[in-house]
Every structure is written in structure tokens, then in C-alpha cells.
Image (cartoon, rainbow, N blue to C red; front, side, top):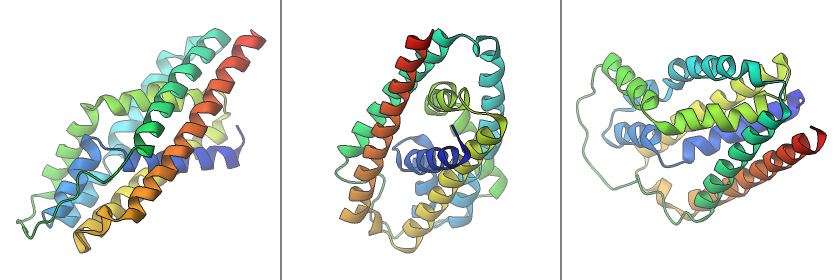
Length: 211
């Protein structure tokens, strides 16, 4: 995978992850809906703290298996399956379920409290481990160090940037995310995820054929 591919894959996977219904984005948007934009932004940054150790762990655990093409094929097939299922779920989206009308504005929590809340949600969420152990590993195993760095950096840029943007839009305009625009965007991202999944399936078959 060259640098351009690494940036493209990482960025779009980051955006798609931010738009995927789950505990992380639910917490971010809940803070924004309750009028705590700064707290929502702090929570959006927590993947930088929680995901780095998971990346190191996954690469360390799988290091001895990197040279086995059967293992690379298995990881590619599992990652492709998850991406295909995530993409299908995005395509079936009819509305963004976390958006609700509210006029409630609460006193902001301490930012450190929000930071810990975001860390715990990420560490206890299976989606975080599924992504890095299976989906991302399928890309990282085929990449050199430079491409891997760009992949991870662009993923965080897409994930964190999208999370902050969503939080800001919810904070400023409570009904925006229920519009057809976001639904259509989510469906498009679903197609992108499925295409990435097909790419991983192809890579899995290629590893098997060449083994």
C-alpha cells in the first residue's frame, strides 16, 4: 500500500467510524446535545490515548505471524467481513438515532472527568479492538513503516475531525443531523466501506493463492 492509498483508506475509515452508531460517538453527541461542547471535544480526542496502546499490542502479538501468508489471508477475510457488515449497516441507515430535540443546557462537567469518561468508553468498547486487531491490521501488515504512519495519522484525523464537527453541528443546530443530507452521506460511506471490504477479500484470496 503506497502513501496515497494509506491516506485515503485511513481518512475514510476514520470518517466512517465517527458516523458508526456506537458508545463513543453516542457519548460525544450526548455531551453536545446537553450544551457541553468543550466536553464533547475532549471526549473526541480520547482515541489518541486509548488506541495507540491497542495498535502496539496488536502489532506485537501478531509480529511472529507476519511472515505467514495464511495468517495474512485470515486477517484480511475477517477485516473484509466486518467492513462489509459495517457498510451494509450504513447503507440501511434511515435516520441518525442519536439526534433528538432538546433545549436542555447543563452545567459543564470538569474536563478531566469527561476525559476519563471517554477513555473508559473506548477501552470497554469491543468496536475499538475489532477495528485495530482485524480491520486496520489487514492494511498495516501490507504496508511499510511510512505508509503505516500515514494510515494511522489519517485515520485519527478523519475520526477526531468528524467527531468534533458532528459535535459542533449538534451543539449549534439540533436538527441538522436528521436531514436527508447526512443520511445520504452515511449511505455513501457505507458503499465506501463495502469497497474497502471487497479489497480486503481480494487481498485475502491473493495471499492464499501465493502461499
